[in-house]
Length: 341
Image 1 (cartoon, helix red, strand yellow):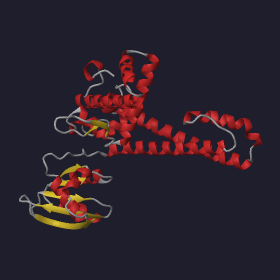
Image 2 (spheres, rainbow, N blue to C red; image 1 turned 60 degrees about the horizontal axis):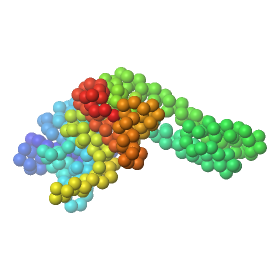
Image 3 (cartoon, rainbow, N blue to C red; image 1 turned 180 degrees about the vertical axis):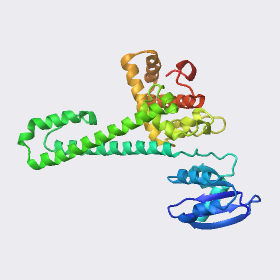
């Protein structure tokens, strides 16, 4: 059986295979159980395999590359236009086989185990921080019912607990017990977050790409490790603007007839990286306002024209472009070469 291209629709236990030969004729169109998937491909001569980028696609891509095949991952949204009327696994696999051969198709780089492990650390840290925020909000709401308040924010938690300590003697024991449980859980989460951040910082120091990214103003160890682990090969992006657009930091276009119309940022792509870059941009703006320096004039000029939130996104866009240049050129940030922030 001569197979040239395979469209593989991934699932948990049942996978759909759509294989075609060099003439485009369908030679295989069937379902495979998880246990027999690798055996099926091991019996084939090396061929091109297309898959949609999803939670398990990088694992299967590594396994299939290890037995000699060429694997290309594609964003699911780019495969969708090739799906014919209706929706089932067979049609999806057929669309994948068609899309993977298109010369203008954009592909997703295959991540290694080390990169995916670092991203799991990031996801775990993000989950814990969201849980901490929920606990702090619950604590503030419960204490507000008894007239104990403090400014919002995790950093004001110590002030809130100090206000509680002042009137603790006149409050019901049940409230003190409940509040103590929440406070203990918050402390436990903060210790776990600190441990994860130390692990990410250590990885950043040991990784050459992450170290270079850390030289960009506004990009610390957390953001640097996230970008380095997410972007396997900067060459997948033709330009710095395309990288910023992939993160979702460029304006949506509705242009026609030679007239350019730009709207809000697209917010497509990696939401986690976008959040980290915007947070980093706000730190750069705050530092420039307080300390001055060469960046202060540039930042203040933008702030005179636009709202601060718009300036934060604009600066995050610039940081993303510089990050791409740093990765592409394999050199640390130099304002005179990469563009000043």
